Length: 168
Image 1 (cartoon, rainbow, N blue to C red):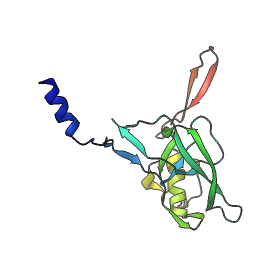
Image 2: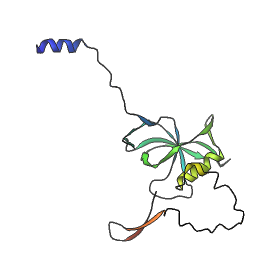
Image 3: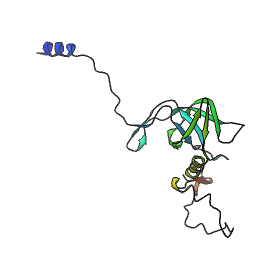
């Protein structure tokens, strides 16, 4: 009986393993990244993904991702060129997929997309990019910000020192 089953199994063609995990970000997507540990003057960085990132239970499965950085051009602030390759960044620093216009080796970011990404990096809702560009009629920008969530929290490090942490 065992020999008959082995003969049947040997007669079956090998089936390739099909990856059924859903892809959250695809290879070639341009994404905006927020620095995972520090805060820089720039609220976000742009990069091109070099591999698919799969998701499961609301999170991304890969621990690190392969990317090519997009470096800002000296000609124009919204013009980017392909830079160095990197594979040490965690996918948790991805803000969102970016809509850019590709012109050969150059990538052009529109102003509305830049403002949307700045708002995302600063913790705002992505839909309110037009509200930040409106001018106040009375010119007084020192309004009460008690309704805004705090972005820093006090705590203690492992050594017992008092620290202030940036809350995402």
